[in-house]
Length: 385
Image (cartoon, rainbow, N blue to C red; front, side, top):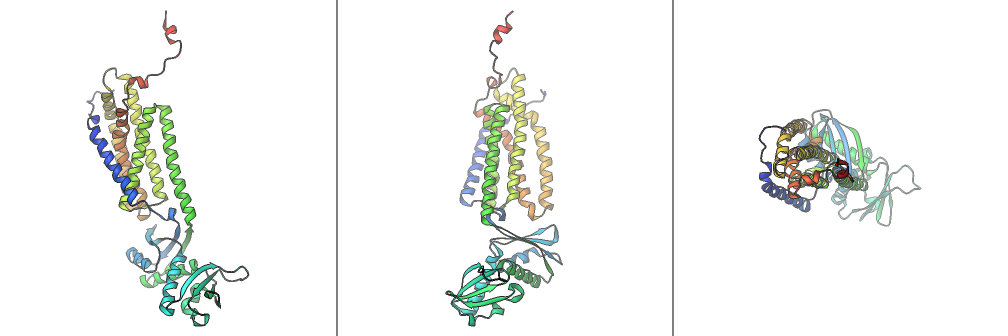
């Protein structure tokens, strides 16, 4: 064992416990009141990648998207200053429906877009059927309402609601083209569509549920591993530390209203691994010192163990934070959530390996008897001369 004087970490264990409780209360309160601001991966929605001929003006693009009736639109740089990723909760067709209803109201007063259906199976060449009430086929100006360059061929007929409009291009593809034209016109830049995709709400819900189950399974597996590798009191300390870290990271995202998507979920799972690694190093030193320190209380052993591992913990955390800081500064908005989650997780995980996991051993009154190997049957007889 090192001869340097042990720092009295456990002397501050009660204030540290109070601090952890305060953080947990704030985090749980933020989760209960605000909830997580789930990203497109979990809520479902549309994602479009576009390329501009000039460096993109992100604030202006966001303003244009808000004007176009999209639901919670987000625009971030993607790879370079001319590549932009546009996300919106809900399909592009929702923006098309909002824009179409606005034009109907402006031109025909009480006209309403009643429903959007697939084109009847017996009709070829058309993708969707729009049902419009409050107007007759003869009153509609097809070219103004459905510009051919976006919607393709359009056929109007009378229906029970009022008008049945068959359109060649569906609302998603039509409105994507409308959006590209508006962006090109208002930014004075050529705009090219690189990729367009849609995540359905059902798939998003499945990803959310499976991600939550994944975190719970990880905690259970950790508890079983530590219980087998060390002792059950260690497993309680490890799981409490991990739950503490995860709740605080989630609470931070809920409090700051930062988007929680699959990259952030991956970061939270990485936090579990990072925090567990630090905790296992501390636990291993505590177990070793319990066996070699003949004198000294549980507090002395834990303080000595934490002091011996402090340099390793500090250097590991510092170098990790330096890399994450660079990732946050230079990685762009697309990966900023991932970097933030890991930065918060590393800081909280370093703290919890000292003042949650080791502190839990104090509250559970760990002693040398807990770590003594069980005597084999007949051991006393074997030792007799």
